Image (cartoon, rainbow, N blue to C red; front, top):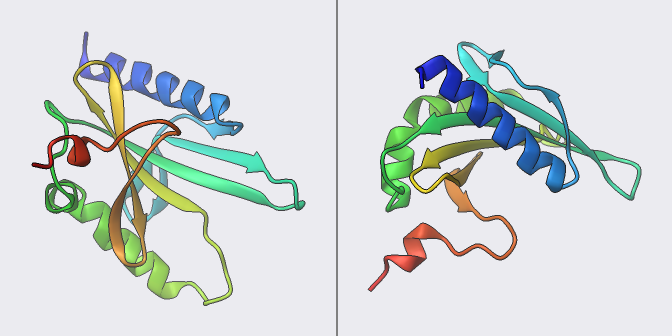
Length: 137
């Protein structure tokens, strides 16, 4: 499978996961959001209180599961740098949505991380265990 074809398949898989989580994928192509940082999927979910949640997903490929937050931070250093600048520009009372990086790892799974104003953290789908916890002694 070519790299372009594989990324299209991953975008479709990510869109399906988001649909199952109640989101409506709005865009499933590379979209530049903030100075050379592109996201592969942008999705929206209407919330019960009349507001909505927006998630922007950057897809990456890893040959193995990410073993630590330090490793994730190293692999996402450009995304963290760009999003830090973005967060610094936002007024305190504005919610920008969520910014996530999904790594396609062996066994056809995604390992997901959220980029926040404080850095990066692993996030899980309901019922999933973290890869980092599984490998802890």
